[in-house]
Amino acid sequence: MYQDLVDRIVCISKGDYFWDIWTSDSLVGQSEYLAESLGISPDDLDIKKINKVFIKYSASDTYYTQALYQNPWTLDKHPEYYSDNQSKANPFFYIQDESFFLYPAPTEAVTWGIQIFVIHKPADIDETTTEANIEIPAQFHKIMADWLKMYIYQSQGKINEAQVAEQDYEKGIANMVAFIKQRYNQPIKKTTSNLDSYR
Image 1 (spheres, rainbow, N blue to C red):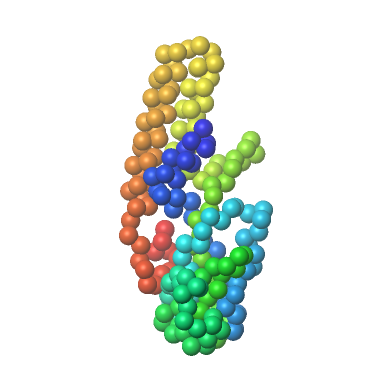
Image 2 (cartoon, one colour):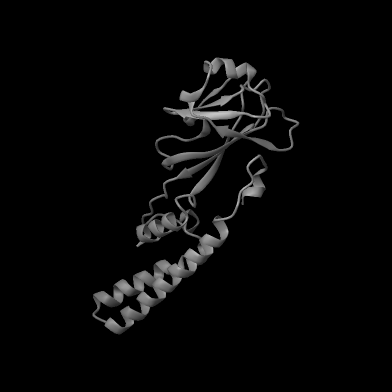
């Protein structure tokens, strides 16, 4: 049941519903950042893709500047060249193995200077999962109870009650899908960002 709900959310949001933000301190002269240094370890949520990368090159910067994705195989020069010569107004990044690479390299160490938006695989749930850790919007958790009612009625041979519960389940899913489309299929700023503008 939970997987059914997750699959429907992924389908209608094109996979971009289950996202999170990681931040990391930037380091002087460093372009390569290991995913592990961002708190992304094998025991954490499965990261499907890094969606956006933002950077503050100075602690006095009010906003993050978006680093655009660059295919590393199309670079004209060796990556080290871009560490020193790429404009801070037009940073870029690419991903290889367990790292992402950011250019130009920071010339000032900034606390939480790098912000990464990731799309992750929805977390599995079990009998110990708390409501706060279920990634389906809280107002739609009742859908899970409707599915359970349907299952119980079916196992008891109460066909009419099971059909009503199934209708409630499908209606709840329809409402959830409409909500998620409305909330997440909106244009997103492409140049600068602060954290709140993406909520």
